[in-house]
Length: 252
Length: 324
Image (cartoon, rainbow over all chains, first blue to last red; front, side, top):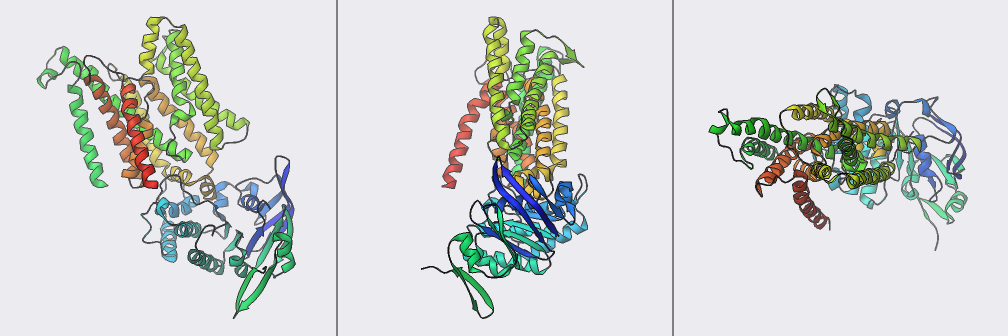
């Protein structure tokens, strides 16, 4: 679905990403991790088509991402920004309906398909009571849920998320991950950047470890303490509670 | 919310009907039907002045609302882009050089200030293009520079003007809506209707940009393109008002603020409140301007700023207190 070919990016002369090569298949759940400043967010923005890569390319369904129009791209992928601060009041309903924007033209009203997906999203994420609320008044967990629902209503095969559970309490984090996992099970391809690897590692099927803008490891998820040591300079351990996989920082 | 709208509609209607009767010369009901000086004042000065005030106020308030959405900031106004100072500088040049040109019956001062407003936005646009950075920061900073530039142009001409000219210039710079006849009103009415159409046609886009740049882009909106097109359109609407009425402060800042809270974040309701409140407030301010200390006809720009500034501070304090 996504092919990244010799991708490099710079801020001025400072390299942010260097010579990345990897490809993501349909239905993958890729966890991207690395230290602060490793280039994770930049990579996600390039893959989302928000910023053009300085060197190399990204192919989406075999076509360079630079050759898609903004609207075309928005029918293929949705990006959840890290910030969920809303500077101006806006209704939850409008944020959800924004997911249908790429399918609409200037004068046309919402189609039956638009209404259908909107209703499905509201139902699936349990947002019925929030529709007339202002986004600014929602809790962090509710905001993230609405943003994920908006991506669902957007009806795209690929969802990219930047630190989606930042500042969420454990309960909200759990519910968010459950929702995301259920979207993955429905066949969505997920690319996710997060420091909360303890939470996401068990759900991913592929991992991409970045260090200083370089690809440290990309491939099927396997637990490797050496990899975590190299990235975070602390030791990690894997254990199982029943069938449930748990990883944690193993230091005294 | 519905009740509030109807209350505001009736208030505005009463204001529009009552206001023309008051002024330096009070006019009674019988006076307006006979052919006498009073009826001339009523039909050719007061009525046009009142409805011009309403259209100008509505355009200013709507431009504030849209500007806030585009800048994602509830303190943004078209003044940030240098539109008002550009328009003022254009008018000053026209007055100084006595440009008596006219186009389709529109006076030279209007035309010049109109192009002044447009030049400010185009300048911001070209700078953003040149540095290939269309972030809000670019617009704001370039706007600051342009504001300084045009302000000094205005002061410079003011300094080298004759005293007699300076007075008419000063009068214009303080903002006023005294007009004779219906020409200016029709000009602004066309702008207002066009503006309202665009505000509703591009509702989805204005909502998207207000939600955030990355969010909007990821939903398929080319934010940079949309923003600059909107700015250019705004300069046409605001430039129109400033060229006729001079710079009138605070309507664009205060009204959208109130409308958002009254409209409970609903776009259509917020637009409706902005339209009614913007128009109503300017008519009210102008009504006060000509009745407060007769026989002085205070420039309405002074009234809106005098009342607007404390009112805005009050709003701010209430809001800050609520946030704490």
